[in-house]
View 1 (cartoon, rainbow, N blue to C red):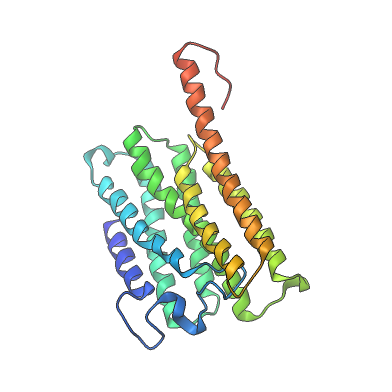
View 2 (view 1 turned 90 degrees about the vertical axis):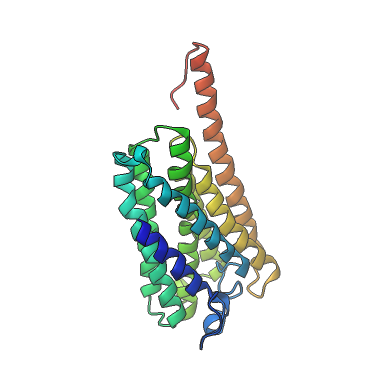
Length: 266
């Protein structure tokens, strides 16, 4: 886990362009004719969306340090999720290398989908092995959840970029329609994950960051679509509301149980 995290940070610094000029350009959103810029496809994100990576470095750094604690030495949930999160971090490094190389043959999409699958699997394992303390829940579930929420929405962005780079027009349906349908599916799936356990708010926040970064370029960018912006705005509202509703129901049930009242199944 520690080695994977160090690679994750180093690969991110290189991939985002913090090391300065190279033949393809200094920043990720400047690469290959703006392939990762906000105006490339209907689900492309504004360049400031990449600010999530330093936050992920910090969050997963805290998660990694937490694994060294004596209390986690025999934690089944760490054994079940550690290799998955490590694999996801290494996959992120591989994606950065592919993205900067310009060899866009679908490999970058496969890598990102594999990364997302590993993180979704981690959330499933966290549901099977629930947290024993609030600290454990905040550091393990919270940090993995943030990465997962971001991964799911950025997987959709990567898919949109790949299709746009190939110039595909699937079933002759307009790109805006496909974008709307994709957002609906992503929001539905993410809401289901966010409503597990006590309500995983960090999953919702990771998704929300990506949706806002998609929404803004659709309103003011060259790849304009009011409908995609509206659906993205509705999606972030729905996933946050669903998550908070779950958290309220759990807290309410616990309060009633403390008072000795009957508790509904939540």
